Amino acid sequence: MNTIELEYDIVVVGGGTGGPMAAVKAKEKNPKLRVLLLDKANVKRSGAISMGMDGLNNAVIPGHATPEQYTKEITVANDGIVDQKGVFAYAANSFAMIEELDKWGIKFEKDETGDYSVRKVHHLGSYVLPMPEGHHMKRVLYRQLKRARVEITNRVVGTRLLTGPGGEVAGVMGFDCRTADFYVIKA
Image (cartoon, rainbow, N blue to C red):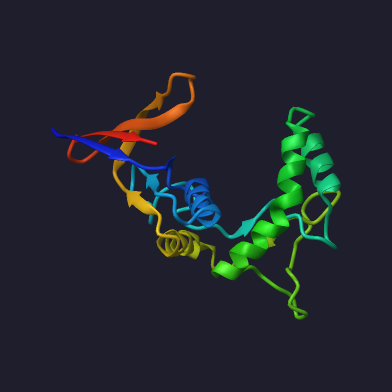
């Protein structure tokens, strides 16, 4: 077993959907940053989305639904036990993310006019946006990681966050699940 010490500007733990998005966004914000994506599996096939998905069940598309409608719908569906500010923030920003994913190559179902073909399954608005080729989601995210020049370390399980003198996160420790090498990654 070896100890491997690395240092980056930013370390993102988790290669599902959120991790790659965070890593790409960090590089877009500042391309000079050294960004590492750490995943316990292989980022090409990790996370709940690795087998694909057939649609977004929470797409707030202008003309079909509003952030206010979506927030009310989710609040009622969860008996009021939600962070309404968080739900509203998600809803207010979801369309921009859908447009970005569309530009990256995620195929969403569209109608004959080229508008997103949203389905109604909820009471107040239409939020379901089919993705006929959702099984390509991880492939598209991986392509964006490579385009952004995010460095990737697969098969390392993060086990502990490193903290600085003020309690701020300053890195992560973990081990390679195949070789048992120990990693200390400072950020």
